[in-house]
Length: 626
Image 1 (cartoon, one colour):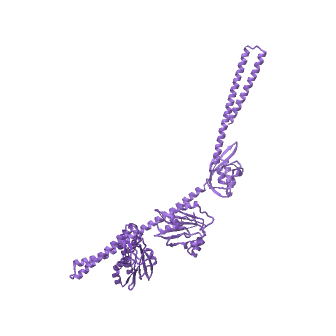
Image 2: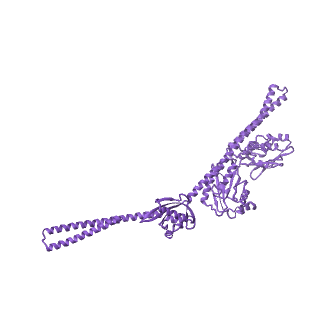
Image 3: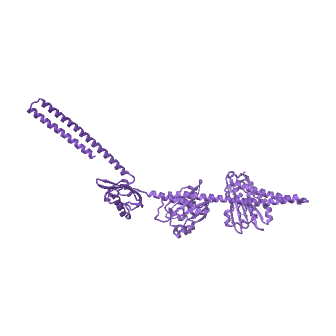
């Protein structure tokens, strides 16, 4: 720009000089013509004046062209400066310029947004106002060293993290670069700075998730995974946690974490245990299980104590001093099977949408780990069931096969001469064959029920008649054991819509079990009564009872309450009975007291009440005798 200005001044000077020469020449020509001969001199003077005029006109044209170029160059410069200034102003990053004394001379919009200062109030202030107190002295020293060095630009904070200080006193981590520019011999430093809080949080989240994945995959043992799962977000997102997992049809198991406060840990442990159904107290477990979406709350909702089961439970929850919580669903393979509730008890901590998003990401890993552990447990149980099946089949087939073999050998080597003796041997063979057929049929029924392909042929039937036919099948066994068998059927019962043969099978199985586990002189009673839901059949005995710890397992296949007793049968009878009742839309229930006996009951649909499809898969737990 300086060269252009010089040329412009030279052109104007030349043009002015040329016009001055023209004026002088014209004056001389006039004087000469007045004083001397007008011949050859006149021609020379006119030529000289014309030449001077041409030079003057050319110089003027040149001067105006230079002026125009000057104007265009200045306009381009203004546009460039305006564009650059606009870029600096609207840049999302903070751009701050300081002079040699480290006072702020430029503060763009990004810096205003980041630090909370207006440019008008911060310009002229020392740069240290934007730094935490502990960094001010060392930062000023670094800027001074940079100004005296050879580098014109470099990253800041290469050896340690740097932090900024907002107007409201909030500190934030940052990354920055600094550059130096000499303007008319005066140094000008410019800093481009960016808040990296979100990036650091994202990195921390990924590290936590990576560590969580490592912890959750350390074992496939179900109990170990549950304990890892309930602690996975502590202390990163929460102070403590509660894990609720649906086990079985609706039974909910609650696992709790520890807390830094031993008293809170004790309170949490008192919340652990099992409940028959999911509930919303004190955390919305039932709601989240149904909705399948997370629920975030800043503390327990008003009136929560009124919904508590008892004062002791309310006191436990109150002692936790819940500040905030987030209950998230655990889902895998298209089903929601549990919830993870992260609890904040420290009032200084926050738990907002950002933390809830991170928690949901963690919950996805927890769900996968728990589901894998469940699959692993099921596979082990399946292997165990297979081994038990082989043991049961080999044992229960060996006895009748041995009997058949012995009888066949008697008939082959020493056939009895008397007809009665031969008939006795033949009947022993037939009894053994019948026992083998019952075992095979039980195995087929159990497999059919578990695969969901149990076929029912429902029709209207007399429930009392069905029960009496089943009782006639076990009356001989009851007499042999000295056990009384009583059938009490109410009169005027409405017809029920059932597969009569299958229900007869269920009642016969229940009666057979009752007789088997009732001591001599005891009684087995079957009651048939109408209820609001249908016709209820209940089989009650005065036998030995079922141990409380065995009740959750009595419908498991191949399971026996007295495992040492091989007289308990194959362990399939109750599994089959439960499957048949489930297929009829009912539920086989049991209650028992040690030393006093047990009661098994179920309800049959009346008349044209709908019945579960024959292809519906009932929930087979399965076991036979107790």
